[in-house]
Length: 400
Image (cartoon, rainbow, N blue to C red):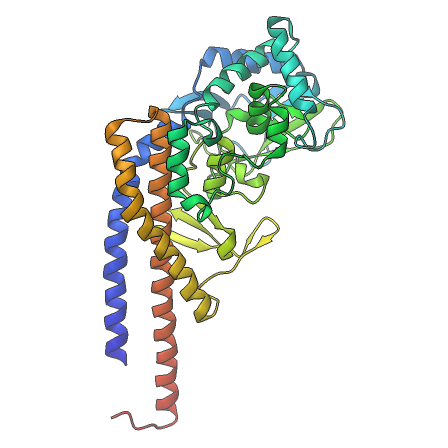
């Protein structure tokens, strides 16, 4: 029994090590593409600083220990000095917010879309003209990012990758989103902006300067303290060291993972990534440190999931069958099609990069989850065998 245990452990170690080497090579290859995808909305630093000055003129605050800049092609907010947990990073007064009073959910109706569309029509005559100008440019950029605005070819390829709904995200082009369909009759641009940049009560400047990254990388959160003059505060979630990029976590908005962030915001998140498979009742994080690890989630927001490691053999078998089947389909059927599109350059460049990155990260996630389940099943079986052996020896069994 012990020889079999060591043989199985050695075999699993070799397989997992080989897989990790291949997967890590793929990750490094596409990291630069990921940086490019996240940096699309870089824009003009002087213009963004004018917007910050405008918010200040309305009674807002911008912490001088941070700055807007680009690093390694990635535009965002970076700390210039150490920042303490709980420290205010920015305060946004109501006077700078394009709001609809007493609105608690921007998806209740199209009030915010209608209000924003009117301000956009006013142009330079709007009291929010500086902010509106930035939003108009943002809409042009985001119309290239969200799958619901992609070309027909790009949408068709994404559908093939997710197996027409077998894999996330659900409703990838928001065709079942009645709010979106209704509000687009007022203004497609304003609807896109409220969808991707709006808060529950309106459009809030500066908040979109903070990129999203989960786990230990999250360094800021939005706080609504109920102050009469302030609509929102941005505070440090933890101690932030000088030179760090300050991230928020868009996943805080609900049961969303990597695939849903692509659908709703048009980008593929950095590691750690979260993959949610509702029909299979599983969800897991892919955490990248010195090596790639899988963390099975039992809960995401108020939703509960199962960990295959802790479930019965039938659930483990069903989960492995699903994951293996999808990975084989992607590698055998979809990969050649994807390569044809890339070689022919049949898609817009940015669209092609996003699809390629999504495919790569999805296959990596599936392979890592499969390896993790198999490895831990062997470990559990060997532990049980060891316990049985110890029990037999304790009771004086003859094992010769």
